[in-house]
Image (cartoon, rainbow, N blue to C red; front, side):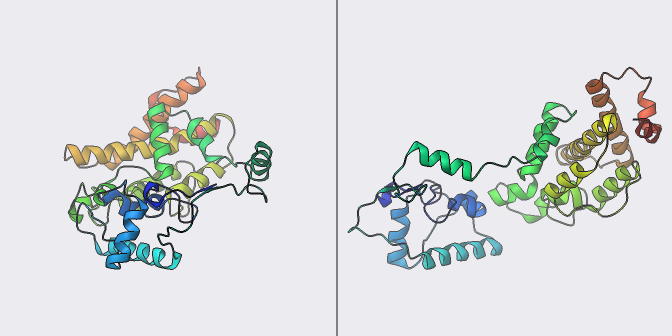
Amino acid sequence: MSLWQDLYSILFWKDTWLGNTSLSLKFPTLFNVVCFKEECLGDVLVRKAIFNECNFVFRRNLFDWEKELQTELSHLLDVSGVVARDEREDRLSWFGCNSNVFSVKSFYNLFRAHPSNPDKTFELIWRNAAPHRVQCFGWLVYLGRVKTSEYHLRLGIINNEEEALCKFCFAELETADHLLLHCKFVWDTWGNVLSWWGIQGPLPNALDDLYRWWDDWNFKAKKRIIWDCLLFAVLWTIWLTRNEAVFNQTSPNWCEMQETIKIRVALRVKTKTGDKEDYSMDDFIFKLGSIIDDS
């Protein structure tokens, strides 16, 4: 559905008026730092017509890579050919059928022709043995919405790029992919965790791909429960270790962190399965391979 109203009632950033998505979603970095998020389309077009540029007001100076995004946005407006015109009345149009007139039948036919395909990875997240708050964190990780230092830098909460460096290696910006996957210390941790299962080889390059890769492994019964829970135990433990480094200035103990991962898995798996077998914490910490083979 395309809703064309008075240009001064269309929100430049938040309404879907150019393409199939709003500019706030297409340019989230600029939207996060722009001052007037409720600005209407008419005002932007008038400024562009007078000054030949949009003249957005930002909360801080843009970084060079953000200026490139601003240039891309300006070019998009130029090639779109969108201008304020008074001679044509705006109207509501329905593109679900040839008549352009909305009906319940046309909506139903459109829905059947484009059925939703739910992401099966959500089952890995929400049917996991992990605690609910860990599931929620895993969901945020999958959606790319973890509040890392790089995220705060984009919002302008952090103004110095040095403050946004990874708190483990201090060599790269602390993005979610770097913090939870690519940091050399974290990467070694993933390698050690996978060695418990006899798995070798490179991990995927992005967290959402890691989830799908993890879900594609074929295990049965309790071994599957342990495997699924392990993913979120690793992510959660890395995140808590990072928070300790940020707020309490502690140095990570990577060997101790791996033992903590085993303990978290042990607690959740025994709770999930109601396991009556004589598996102690020591068994999970020192004999995890045997437990995996018996599952």
